[in-house]
Amino acid sequence: MSDTILEYLEKFGSKTFKRLPFGEVDALILSQFSYLKFDGIVPGPEDVDSFVTLQDIKNHPSFNDLFTDKRYEKPNRKLFKLMEESVRFGDLKMDYYVNIIGEEMEIQFSAVTFRFPEGIDYVAYRGTDENMVGWKEDANLSIMEEIPGEKEAVKYLKDVAKVLKGNFYVGGHSKGGLNAIYASSAAPVSVKKRIIGIYSFDGPAIREDVRSKVDYQGVRDRYHKFVPKSSLIGMIFETDDIYTVVKNKSAGILQHDPYTWVVKDIDLWYEDSLSKSAEIVKTAMANWLKDLDKDARTRFIDCVFEVADACKDNDLVSIYLNPVKSIRQMMDGYDRMDEGERNFLKEVLNGLIQNTGGLAKDEVRSGWGEFTDSVDKWIVMVQGVMEERKASKEKSEKKKPAKRKLPVKKNKKTSKG
Image (spheres, rainbow, N blue to C red):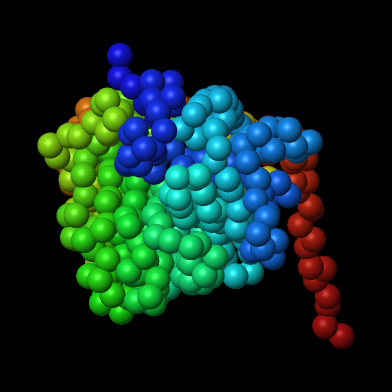
């Protein structure tokens, strides 16, 4: 049976960091833990010298609010329990929690600092959560040199470095991993030299044209990037190939979930290379982005999120819990779009499909079995909604009263006098 971060905690939770030094699996655990909703529980930057322990959090009246993301409620609860009961994480202290959601600025940013009695500090950036604005911000990576979240990440690292006494780790999962390497690259030299290691778990890369502007090379030797075998998110803008491939229990985009990453003893379980399907998607995405100039990318992003924003409950948890309702709302949003925008959206999406090539279709399907099964379910739901809309339209047409033909008036002939 393949172990995950949960089994790792069961096996090695009794070991202190003196007996078993801090490693990549610990970094992955903390990166996943940063997704919990600590609002109103963990002190922020304004509460200097304040912190909470896991025991404090467990006894807090708002404890259950940590697990509002229903997609991961069960594993997140187990993760908290195992950490809180372990020797390894039991004395963990948390502070400097920040959570910013801004629709107008198109920003979703969150970070928290973990401190251990042994003097180990880990600055964790949260990845994209269920808020749709976070996904819009991710898309903006293709058109902006610095998205608002990256700017906040740099500020956070500089501020928290003033509070931390010694050296520290920085890391995160998904966009959190990108924020970790971006902030570390853009930080002042005085902060850079205190960073022990930077962890990115399936996070996008810094765009190649931006790397030299933030001194990426200055921290590259301490950068540890891990991606699943069928990585998609982690391959966005990736040209450096400085990553380690990790074995996974799931398939396709579902491998992005840290709870599916396989642990072997005290390390992640390494694979030799990405899957062929991941390589195809990586190349297709790169070519597709090259085919679109900045204006086209901006227009495409606006079109996609105009459709997504049609969902009344504008977050992924609501879409996950009410998929058919969400599909109906998004299709209504698509119908309300200008015809020119609809045609543009279809044209750009067709370009992505063409970039994958005919060969890729079977390869991606065979390599992403569980994921494509999930996609198939969504396709069935979409088809169901389309049939429902068609039937409703036909019924509406039948109810319309037939147009009554008016008698044609004949002009009366007048005799000339």
